[in-house]
Amino acid sequence: MSLRDIYKDKIANELVKDLGLTNLMQAPKLSKIVINAGIGPFRESKEAVDSFVEELSAIAGQKPIASSAKKSEAGFKIRQGDVVGYSVTLRDARMWAFFEKFVNIVMPRVRDFNGLSLASFDGSGNYSVGIKEHTVFPEVNPNKVKGIRSIQVTFCIKNGNKQKSTALLKKLGMPFKKEA
Image (tube, rainbow, N blue to C red; front, side, top):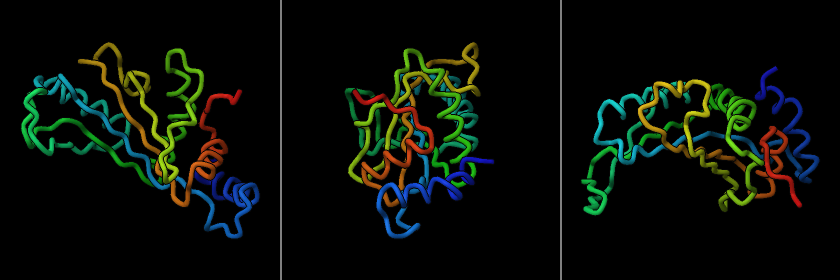
Protein backbone atom coordinates (compact mmCIF):
# COMPACT_ATOMS: atom_id res chain seq x y z
CA MET A 1 0.00 0.00 0.00
CA SER A 2 1.47 3.36 -1.01
CA LEU A 3 1.85 6.36 1.26
CA ARG A 4 -0.76 8.25 -0.79
CA ASP A 5 -3.35 5.52 -0.07
CA ILE A 6 -2.41 5.44 3.61
CA TYR A 7 -2.91 9.23 3.74
CA LYS A 8 -6.33 9.03 2.10
CA ASP A 9 -7.58 6.03 4.10
CA LYS A 10 -6.13 6.66 7.54
CA ILE A 11 -3.98 9.75 8.14
CA ALA A 12 -6.46 12.38 6.86
CA ASN A 13 -9.17 11.06 9.21
CA GLU A 14 -6.75 10.98 12.15
CA LEU A 15 -5.71 14.58 11.45
CA VAL A 16 -9.36 15.72 11.44
CA LYS A 17 -9.83 14.13 14.88
CA ASP A 18 -6.49 15.23 16.37
CA LEU A 19 -6.69 18.83 15.17
CA GLY A 20 -10.39 19.25 16.00
CA LEU A 21 -11.41 19.99 12.41
CA THR A 22 -15.02 19.72 11.30
CA ASN A 23 -14.50 18.51 7.74
CA LEU A 24 -12.13 16.17 5.91
CA MET A 25 -11.46 18.93 3.36
CA GLN A 26 -9.88 21.06 6.12
CA ALA A 27 -7.17 18.49 6.76
CA PRO A 28 -3.65 19.56 5.75
CA LYS A 29 -2.43 17.91 2.57
CA LEU A 30 0.89 17.66 0.75
CA SER A 31 0.32 19.56 -2.51
CA LYS A 32 3.79 19.63 -4.11
CA ILE A 33 7.50 19.25 -3.46
CA VAL A 34 9.96 21.74 -4.95
CA ILE A 35 13.63 20.84 -5.31
CA ASN A 36 16.05 23.75 -5.87
CA ALA A 37 19.79 23.69 -6.50
CA GLY A 38 22.24 26.42 -7.39
CA ILE A 39 25.15 25.61 -9.68
CA GLY A 40 27.52 28.11 -8.04
CA PRO A 41 31.12 28.13 -9.24
CA PHE A 42 30.52 25.15 -11.54
CA ARG A 43 28.61 27.29 -14.06
CA GLU A 44 31.88 27.93 -15.97
CA SER A 45 32.19 24.20 -16.75
CA LYS A 46 29.53 23.02 -19.20
CA GLU A 47 30.48 19.39 -18.51
CA ALA A 48 29.93 19.79 -14.74
CA VAL A 49 26.59 21.58 -15.27
CA ASP A 50 25.35 18.92 -17.71
CA SER A 51 26.40 16.20 -15.27
CA PHE A 52 24.52 17.89 -12.43
CA VAL A 53 21.37 18.33 -14.56
CA GLU A 54 21.43 14.58 -15.27
CA GLU A 55 21.88 13.81 -11.56
CA LEU A 56 19.04 16.17 -10.58
CA SER A 57 16.83 14.55 -13.24
CA ALA A 58 17.58 11.13 -11.79
CA ILE A 59 16.89 12.33 -8.24
CA ALA A 60 13.54 13.92 -9.12
CA GLY A 61 12.39 11.61 -11.89
CA GLN A 62 11.78 14.51 -14.28
CA LYS A 63 13.79 17.17 -16.09
CA PRO A 64 14.69 20.32 -14.08
CA ILE A 65 14.00 23.87 -15.25
CA ALA A 66 16.83 26.39 -15.44
CA SER A 67 16.65 29.47 -13.18
CA SER A 68 18.20 32.63 -14.59
CA ALA A 69 19.68 35.65 -12.83
CA LYS A 70 17.19 38.53 -12.70
CA LYS A 71 19.91 41.18 -12.64
CA SER A 72 23.66 41.44 -13.12
CA GLU A 73 26.00 41.18 -10.12
CA ALA A 74 29.61 42.14 -10.85
CA GLY A 75 30.93 40.77 -7.54
CA PHE A 76 29.80 37.27 -8.48
CA LYS A 77 30.56 37.65 -12.22
CA ILE A 78 26.92 37.05 -13.08
CA ARG A 79 25.11 38.76 -15.94
CA GLN A 80 21.39 39.17 -16.27
CA GLY A 81 19.96 36.04 -17.91
CA ASP A 82 22.81 33.69 -16.89
CA VAL A 83 21.67 30.30 -15.56
CA VAL A 84 22.35 30.22 -11.81
CA GLY A 85 20.40 27.15 -10.73
CA TYR A 86 17.81 24.52 -11.48
CA SER A 87 14.47 23.58 -9.93
CA VAL A 88 11.97 20.75 -10.18
CA THR A 89 8.35 20.73 -9.01
CA LEU A 90 6.91 17.32 -8.18
CA ARG A 91 3.20 16.59 -7.90
CA ASP A 92 0.96 13.53 -7.53
CA ALA A 93 2.61 10.09 -7.90
CA ARG A 94 6.16 11.42 -8.33
CA MET A 95 5.73 13.65 -5.27
CA TRP A 96 4.61 10.74 -3.07
CA ALA A 97 7.39 8.47 -4.38
CA PHE A 98 9.99 11.19 -3.71
CA PHE A 99 8.61 11.79 -0.20
CA GLU A 100 8.89 8.09 0.68
CA LYS A 101 12.44 7.92 -0.72
CA PHE A 102 13.40 11.13 1.12
CA VAL A 103 12.15 9.92 4.50
CA ASN A 104 13.15 6.25 4.32
CA ILE A 105 16.39 6.28 2.31
CA VAL A 106 17.92 9.77 1.99
CA MET A 107 17.60 11.15 5.53
CA PRO A 108 19.14 8.06 7.19
CA ARG A 109 22.13 8.39 4.80
CA VAL A 110 22.92 11.97 5.89
CA ARG A 111 26.09 12.12 7.97
CA ASP A 112 25.56 12.93 11.70
CA PHE A 113 21.77 13.06 11.27
CA ASN A 114 19.88 13.71 14.52
CA GLY A 115 16.51 14.66 13.09
CA LEU A 116 15.08 17.65 11.26
CA SER A 117 14.49 20.98 12.98
CA LEU A 118 10.95 22.15 13.67
CA ALA A 119 12.05 25.76 13.05
CA SER A 120 12.04 25.47 9.24
CA PHE A 121 8.34 26.18 8.68
CA ASP A 122 7.25 29.38 6.95
CA GLY A 123 4.09 31.35 7.80
CA SER A 124 1.91 29.21 5.51
CA GLY A 125 3.02 25.90 6.96
CA ASN A 126 5.43 24.93 4.18
CA TYR A 127 8.57 23.10 5.31
CA SER A 128 12.07 23.54 3.84
CA VAL A 129 15.11 21.29 4.27
CA GLY A 130 18.64 21.93 3.05
CA ILE A 131 20.88 19.00 2.17
CA LYS A 132 24.59 19.80 1.99
CA GLU A 133 25.60 16.95 -0.31
CA HIS A 134 23.41 15.75 -3.16
CA THR A 135 25.36 12.48 -3.15
CA VAL A 136 23.15 11.10 -0.31
CA PHE A 137 20.51 10.29 -2.94
CA PRO A 138 20.79 6.67 -4.12
CA GLU A 139 20.54 7.68 -7.82
CA VAL A 140 23.82 9.63 -7.64
CA ASN A 141 27.06 7.71 -8.10
CA PRO A 142 29.59 9.53 -5.87
CA ASN A 143 32.49 8.26 -8.02
CA LYS A 144 31.19 10.04 -11.15
CA VAL A 145 30.18 13.35 -9.54
CA LYS A 146 31.86 16.45 -11.04
CA GLY A 147 31.32 18.49 -7.89
CA ILE A 148 29.20 18.27 -4.75
CA ARG A 149 26.29 20.68 -4.50
CA SER A 150 23.66 21.42 -1.91
CA ILE A 151 19.96 20.98 -2.57
CA GLN A 152 16.96 22.64 -0.96
CA VAL A 153 13.73 20.64 -0.71
CA THR A 154 10.47 22.45 0.09
CA PHE A 155 7.33 20.54 1.07
CA CYS A 156 4.31 22.70 0.16
CA ILE A 157 1.30 21.96 2.31
CA LYS A 158 -2.27 22.97 1.50
CA ASN A 159 -4.59 24.03 4.38
CA GLY A 160 -1.61 24.25 6.69
CA ASN A 161 -0.17 26.42 9.40
CA LYS A 162 2.80 25.38 11.52
CA GLN A 163 0.75 23.23 13.90
CA LYS A 164 -1.27 21.45 11.19
CA SER A 165 1.76 20.97 8.93
CA THR A 166 3.86 19.56 11.78
CA ALA A 167 1.09 17.08 12.61
CA LEU A 168 0.81 16.03 8.95
CA LEU A 169 4.54 15.55 8.40
CA LYS A 170 4.92 13.61 11.68
CA LYS A 171 2.09 11.26 10.67
CA LEU A 172 3.72 10.78 7.25
CA GLY A 173 6.96 9.75 8.96
CA MET A 174 9.18 12.85 8.71
CA PRO A 175 12.08 12.34 11.17
CA PHE A 176 11.95 15.46 13.36
CA LYS A 177 14.27 16.06 16.34
CA LYS A 178 12.94 14.84 19.64
CA GLU A 179 11.60 17.65 21.81
CA ALA A 180 13.51 18.12 25.05
